Image 1: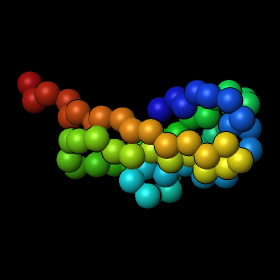
Image 2: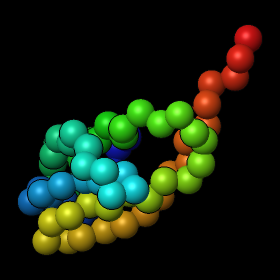
Image 3: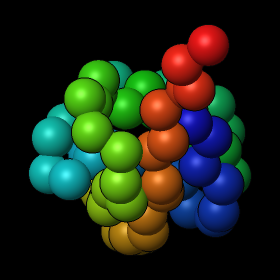
Length: 66
């Protein structure tokens, strides 16, 4: 996922529901992160840790069966 904002250059960690995730700081305004696999649909908390701590959420929806 792409996370945008300000003050993200010093991001120390990104977590999804408390689980650390791999991330890359692209600029002071953009961080990308990969959410851990999930077998369930739902809303997950996202936390960016660093000088400008931020929290938010996203909703995971499974691909439809065809």
